[in-house]
Length: 135
Image (tube, rainbow, N blue to C red; front, top):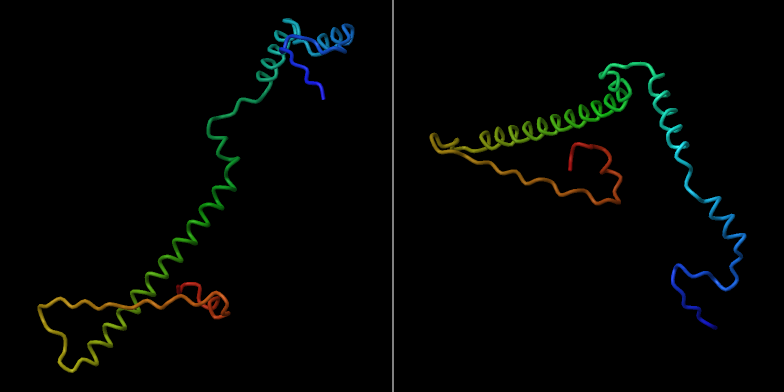
């Protein structure tokens, strides 16, 4: 295959001057009067529109804001319920430890009760869907 090396300004060997002239005319930028007419049409269209207050933009975002607020409330509620459940469990464990301890808790010495969290349930067991607040 023969390679043709040429710069960007050279024409191909089979270029037709009439076709080239027609293509240049078709793809030429518009005249100056087009741009001034376009600007006048745009400015007239902008002046036709109703004058709106700055806060009217928020009405367009009302639905998205309500959805986001609802999701935030649900996540916050689930977090609070989870914290209350964990606090209740730790209080029950502390009460059980104090009840079963025959000596009683020593006074004046801080006592730390550690709770081993339950390992997560394997993904293939259906029981993992029963309580969404447990890990």
